[in-house]
Length: 44
Image (tube, rainbow, N blue to C red; front, side, top):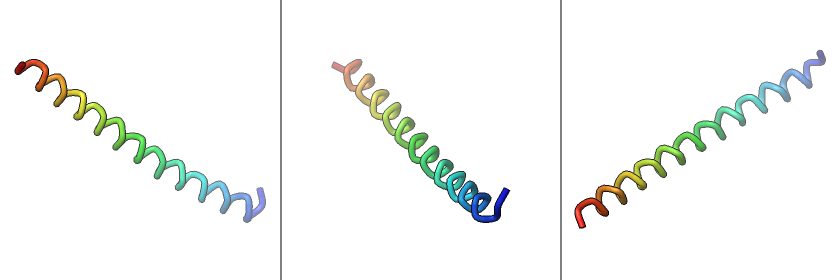
């Protein structure tokens, strides 16, 4: 495998990790929001 290809793959891996972290944060935020909405609905 060429060095350029290896570097490109490493960059893509890093990008994927960043995207994965963002997705994880978004899901966590959505779950928290839904929990809060459920809690508010339960109080009414």
